[in-house]
Length: 274
Image 1 (cartoon, rainbow, N blue to C red):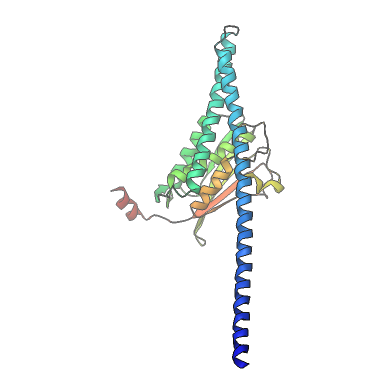
Image 2: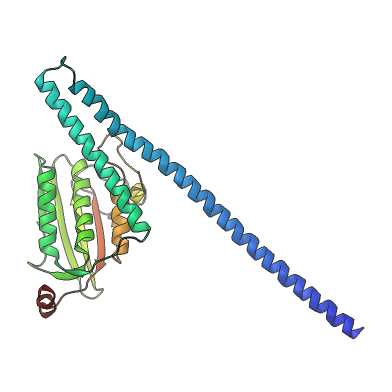
């Protein structure tokens, strides 16, 4: 009887372990099923958004190209058609570049190449590039840096991509006033924080997180893909930092991001340059 009791206890414990394992597997399968369904939903939404975003500029390019070949329009009209074709071609190219950049970064095929770079020089060149690409009659591009030169270790190409994206985005929503690029250094926390502020229409506080999602556009009539801020967040996080919207700023919109502060000593810089 005692032997039979031990056998019964053993099988009861064994069955209980199997039951717990099955329940655990069932929960894992349910989670995996939910993730698969979510991934499928996101894929469907992505394809729908992509088809819409691609079709819009493509229709404009095809339509105005056909008008360009007709003799029913004056040279002034055709110049306007050329302008529209160029704008939509640029929009389509930017869309494809953003999609490819996001895909490469998320798949891990892009490595971060840390090299010494001068933050002041890099910020200045980026703002000059944005100013030349998007000259605004009633908007002043401003810079404010606490030092004349600051060398840090970072990926200059990715860093530059973020700095160009944010003022470019600000220029779409700012009709007058200024767009300011600045940064501050926190030696204690070992962080460098950059801020891009404008005097545009601003962003509602309840949209502070939504603006970083893919294909989110607060104004559907403003040219853009809705991928710029999403790409900025991915790049900044890969650089070891974070990006956010400063909801306390009330004159327009202020986007801020910080990355680790890894200063480069002069002797290290000279060694790298050799």
